[in-house]
Length: 611
Ligand SMILES: Nc1ncnc2c1ncn2[C@@H]1O[C@H](COP(=O)(O)OP(=O)(O)OP(=O)(O)O)[C@@H](O)[C@H]1O
Image 1 (cartoon, helix red, strand yellow):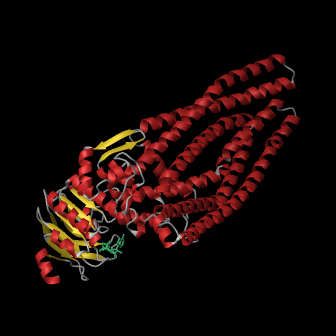
Image 2 (tube, helix red, strand yellow):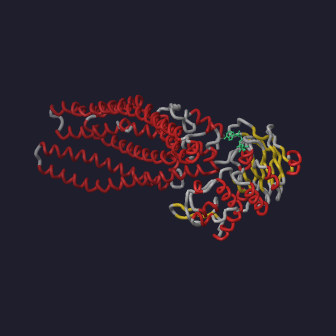
Image 3 (cartoon, helix red, strand yellow):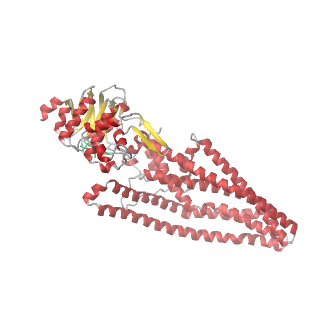
């Protein structure tokens, strides 16, 4: 795996916007690449499915579509000859040839009708299966090794709206790639097929047409392509920012309502909407310019076949049907050669989606593997207890050392209280021990991950029933395709007893049973959520538990009751807390001070010195 710095350099040198959701009105730098330079990036994203375990399915779909396109082109070439015979027969009043040509038409229609339907179906299936695979691939990387968390830790590698990239950019990328690639393939076949037809009539026609269309395509891509792509990129970003701002309002509805912060939030969302509209207006103008140029360019080609073939017809060197055939072939080649011009808006949209997905893939690849090199080493090799050896913890961007050269040994049955002023680095130490933060040095020895349990400051309430809340992160979970299960089977009676134990008697009845599904993050108070989280800890019976101000919202008697339970059921634990009453439930104390070298001592020593 390339080193993090090399990959970040790659992102920077690519002029990619790697930023958090933007402030209203804030103008972001846009990619400076031309459309042609984006091809390697498109290829990098597109090929993933075609080299995956599903490559046979992917290649099968593509193989069928290539064969169907060849068949379709052959049919169109055939139609041009049938039409030529038909019109010559009409002009020369030859009945037999006329009806023969009509019969040929009927045969072609009988073959073409089902072929078109099947081709359309296979193309749609290809798009669907590709989207399914790519979305799963991205989501797999997003959830692997806590990449969803790490993505937002270092400022230089933070990117805007990953959810939008996964949910909206993937289908748009897959749709546009399929439509454009298959369209391009058909056009190439058309060019080859009809250039042959034209060549057999007059090679001069082929040269004139090729020169005209090549110059036209180059002019269009240069004048409009880059600018449209940049605008598409900015539009996607602004749409994501607007959605992000509304999402944050929903997530923090209560706090915003208490603060009466709606004016500011609404102004911010409106500002983002305005930015989106301004960019959309600009894009409309550029698209109108492109349409004007394309129209002039295309209409000029209508007259060309007549002007080029009429002199030979007037001299009696060409049949009447040949003029129509030349017009037909000319139009098909011209449309094929102008494909890139016609599809420029779609191509610029695809370019923007490619850019955004490629950056997401690069960052996820960087974060979805455990980091190597100069980082904190973790060894999940202890049966119980914890050992920190010469541990130095830095903030993810290496701006600040939060603790240096820390040595701590905690044996089975011992417990540690981490104390210190707000912002000194207590939670960060737990992040480093759990492996979420890796910047720094030294070694952390703990029991295996499945034998450790972390209670964060803010309990997470997953979507699901009350039972799901209590068993999280284990228990059953439902997906549209069925139910999944991860260990831990607990009876209703036992859950009820545990609810009583964590001072939540009657919660089950109050909410309507264990299987009722509610928005628990809103229905339960902060303290109730902390007690539910505490129940999870008791249920999982870890060998080592970490509690980051996990009882901060509770009154002192309830907090004491929970800690007594913890002492009985989980003998080795580490807590962060500000209340002095907590010392009674711990054997040791780690005290952070201003020097970034925390002091490790017994609880008795701490009490002697500070109380
Ligand atoms: N992702 C980050 N990048 C840079 N600095 C960070 C990041 N996250 C936290 N910090 C900084 O690290 C310092 C320690 O934060 P931490 O959350 O560990 O404090 P704490 O001691 O647990 O505080 P509190 O008691 O208020 O919870 C803070 O100054 C914080 O601003």
